[in-house]
Length: 210
Ligand code: 5GP
Image (cartoon, rainbow, N blue to C red):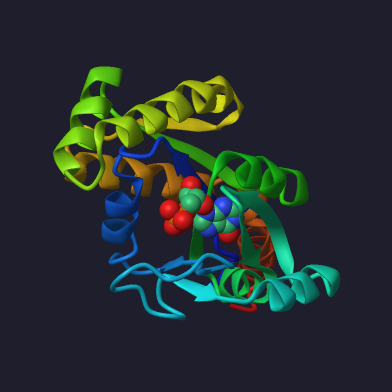
């Protein structure tokens, strides 16, 4: 029997590897990664409609006015937002939808969808985080420090999440996230359709109709 998918919001410090974890996760059946809209410019290699929908500020603002986002936030001078229609359609079709968004957006989603599952991906230790940021080699020392400072701020919100998942070994982290989502899906409250159908069938069998 088809049932509605689970909406999962994933956040984590920059360098925690959440993007890699999510890319692996959505290779499994029944998962869809939501594509956000943003007003920031595409980075090298990014394609419109794949990493983001790249929009002008005017277009983004008109979408805010017409209520087309589940949430939106301004982050380092640019807008980012989660388009409502795609997420709703995929959940309705039974897919587990993943939103990889920053903390303010995540907490807002929880207000709008109290059943959303909030996951926070963490590195095994603060020292590992710093090493990963340095080893990426894409940023200078000042930028690494900036990201570490931001992690300190963001760590204040970790307690607002439903689950913490440590990203030490990639595969183990992907499986841990997958299991959390599957367990959420098995909660009785998400299976009322199944319960009604089972009750109907039991009655039919009892009465000799099946
Ligand atoms: P970046 O510009 O590096 O791709 O993303 C910057 C931050 O915006 C990241 O923390 C990312 O998770 C977050 N982000 C991406 N899409 C959305 C969105 O739709 N809403 C919110 N609130 N944050 C987003």
